[in-house]
Length: 490
Image (cartoon, rainbow, N blue to C red; front, top):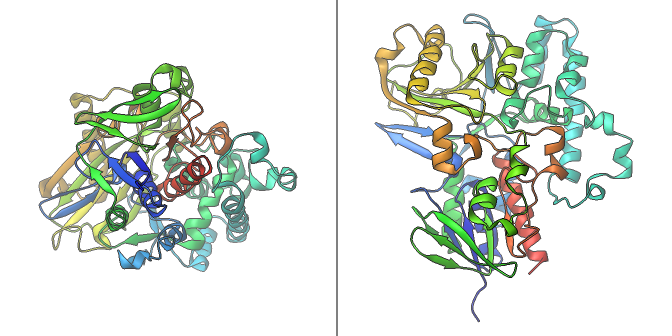
């Protein structure tokens, strides 16, 4: 008897995890990927002995990945070595003023107390509440497909809406605990990685503080690419077939049943199709209008997460005073978010992020060198030209001199910039968004696009657009939801 066949479109984390799960269920799985290699936004590029993670750089929620590999009788340690970073990250308020957030809660409490008297006790309270939100979210909200409001609300949680933070913004929530602007920034920085601003993101996402303060920040030696490599190797062990440099051009549907995927190379037939490509692209470009669950107007009304202006640098010398993860909060925090979400322009004086994995890992750069990843959040959908890139590069380099040294440009061995146009070209990302849909109140859980098409019976979606949303762990969970939905309907 022939195996049922599945085509997976896209070899990002969502596609890789879905492919492995489907192969485990006994399907014959083929993954088609427009790029030359796997990983999607978590791809890797190498040059002159440097290994750069092109996208995600924070390894949080290690238990989610452990749980995923356990489904196959595996452990992550069979594929890569995981270490806990100390400090987890460093926050700069100026060139000379910075604080470290460490795996030691007592040290962090002392750090907070030095900035604001009484804030140590407030931090304990805040983290206790964050842990509660995290545990409830894992138990009740994250591993679910939502079809109606009844799936979302349970009577016992209606009474706790305020405690869960579903009815307020994280900005107003944090402000109840801390008066210091510095401490408020520390507790809100992670919202950028959810694609929102503190003003438009629900306070339930304060649960992220449980991850970095209580659980700690981890790192796989060799880089985040070790995770995608592990998933890829797992797929190969399960006989998943990969077709790289293969771009999907349309999904052929007959009487509400997807029959095949047309590509630049050939037509691939399948019993089921799961899409890990950009959701908006798949709906509006791969499907006929009558089979689109979400038409063009739907997407134009959505709040997109920011894009990114990223500079990858290989420097032939070490940089003093920086950690693995560094957040630069020297400039106006409110104006930064206003420029991104209201003014829709490259921030005049941005806060930004520097990742220096070579401070923790000597395998990602030549000996005595530094591997740097500088990320500035910027609006999706704005202009991206070579002339603008030169201007933005100049602004960021002028600021970087304070942290890397006046002559750091003389030590550059490798330099690469990616931004909106690259996200559009590499990932078919809507308006060049780096992350997809922002986690606003009405773009979370129930209000995110569904895993199963409402117009095509055997078409499914995984990845950051669906529940539970943005992030490597979230995309891995999304695939588990999508595959479970598929199993219900075959």
